[in-house]
Length: 218
Image (cartoon, rainbow, N blue to C red; front, side, top):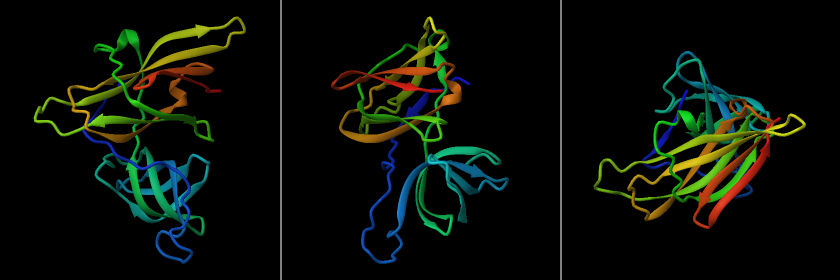
């Protein structure tokens, strides 16, 4: 499915294991942060997570949010939680976009590479997701049509003599007349099953110039 992600404001905190705020047993003393898959039941509640480290944890209390709109499905998420006896006590959970890889010949708009602030890309330990962390410049505008958009566009598939293939991707970013007053964090997770090659090369236009990153997919 072709997918372009439109952003008004997207703000999530970075994923990492947090040190305790104190050495006691308060609510946040054992807090962790991970990217994960959130497994949703028939009642539209998240009941289990699978972290990027491969840990499968049931939730101490089923969780739901406005972005959980489909039953019996899996969402990509970033969450903060306490790990309690092989269960997860959710403190906060936010959805992470999983864009499709769109062929340039099928991209039904102009390819735009407005600048972003590049932070990092990394492969999940399970190998299921290629993650991207960037910051977008944004601000409030009186223009109701001002909306930023992001997409992952593929323009080339290179096959080497040893039959290994590299898929070349471009980060499409259209500032869309949104003011550039402050930065907001954006995460994207590309499922590696959507990358039909042995490795991938991603071109990102940053404020410091073009950034090219490479990752092995299988």
